[in-house]
Amino acid sequence: MSIKKKTKILLLSVLTEKNAIITEELGICSIASFLEQDGFDVTLVNSTRSYLDMGKIYEANADIIGVPMYSTTEKVVVEVCTKIKKDNPNIILVMGGYWPTLYGKQLMETYDIFDYAIMGEGELPFRDLSNAIEYKADASNIKSLIYRKGDCVIQNERGGVVEDLDTLPFPRRDLLVNNKLKYAYISTSRGCMANCNFCWNRKFWNPADKNYWRGRSPENVIEEIKLLVDKYNVNRYWFIDSSFEDSKNGKPDRMWAIAQKIIDEKLTITYETYFRSEVYKKFTPEKMELMKKSGLVGVIFGTESGNADDLRLYGKIATVEDNLNTIKYFRENDIAIDIGFINFNPYSTFDNLRKNADFLEETVFASVLYYFVERCQITEFSDLYYKVKNDGLLLPTDKMGCYDYKYINEDIGHLSEYLYYKYHGNEDSIVYFYAKKIGSIIREEFKIVSYLKRNYGIYDDKIMKAIKKNEETAWELLREINASNADCFRQLLDMTESKWNKNEAEKLTEKYWSLQNMKGMSDKLEKNRLSLYLNLNKLGLSPINYFNLNI
Image (cartoon, rainbow, N blue to C red; front, side, top):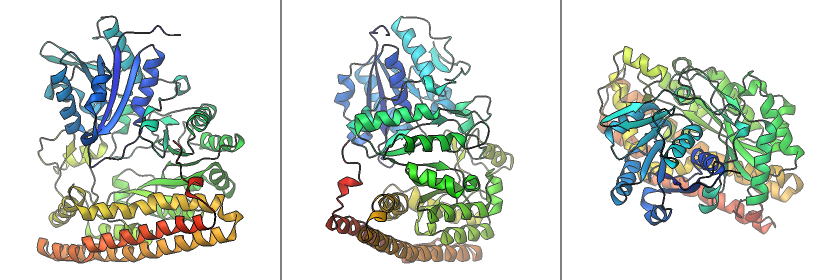
């Protein structure tokens, strides 16, 4: 047993209101367990900025505060940490996460409130730093650490990682309980075997910029699930791996083994995860049945595009045909599908944008406005960044890491920027709020429908009839807005190809994508969703049976 140490640590996650989906922030939960195992007293807090209780922070009486930072949270993290440092100048502030991994030295030079930054996964360097502070030792030789020496900021070389993930203690679950979350997050692996050209993922896990993947054993994963079921009564899970089917040998045997062990242990759970689109080729009817029986109800695919040129640009293995086939295959098996999609990039053409619209309409994802407005984020250290830079398309910017760019076709650039900043980049856009609610039907409600059909509908004809009627109505409504959204985007393309005109764009978007239209469709879908729960309740199936209400 570790010796109890005097140094107190607070791990704090702060989100913006725009990104205010409170999750467990599994990284700091894992670091908390690792530090606790080493004898440290660790407190966990997460909140959006506006609801952050500063009293909780000060009550922890921490000597060290660690904060994850992302590109989207840099501003609020700095704001909160500035206040903390002002109120207690002796507190040691440490930032970590992917943003300090990529830009830690620049961030330390920009914000003098931070004493240290950690690069890469945090368990080992945070433990070593905490011990150095505990024993008043020199921290300058700790790998993966960025620190201050006089007026200089020193960045050490990157260190190793935890090779055997089974040796890590299970993450703390304070944030799951305190926030009464519906889902528990589980990471069954770290790293990614893919090489998407827009992604900096490799840089986080491996400074050599090569694929670096490690997976937990099926036995270890099942042990954690059993603990969560027994201790916290959790039955809904997110497996947050970059792609659940990954393995060092390229075969999904580990995934099949996890699914089989869930069944063997008689764990009644549901889960969703991430796959690459070409995964359907590895499935057989027997393997699909295995995954469904183990509780798989939802998948997010990184399809990214509906045209071959952009898929090659992004370094995707899957073809357009693969993207279509995998969506069709999983939907036919009652697995709810969501996708990642990048409509615009610096090299977009009218022909490829029309192909994207065709793809979105065929798959009914045109029902979700944000797929049309999304554009490629160019981040430093990605392969695509260097291509765009070499092609002279990057625009000068003061922003760290996220680059604006010119478009090969100037008018397409006007359309992209108009749509992006009117909706996605506009925090006050009520239209975009309702567009996201429509998207949640695809992402959330069909998972519930899938679970209900498998676990209740097959045993009761009346329940199955009610579920199918609801599902049919939802698809009818989605197809209605699907066609309307696709029509609007095609008209925007036709207008732009003739000659970009912002006034004409305003007329078209107000006609098709008005608040009245978006809210009206959102309300219809919400009414249909609630009617299912009411009808099932009348049939004797209470929501308490299929919602995780007992956390």
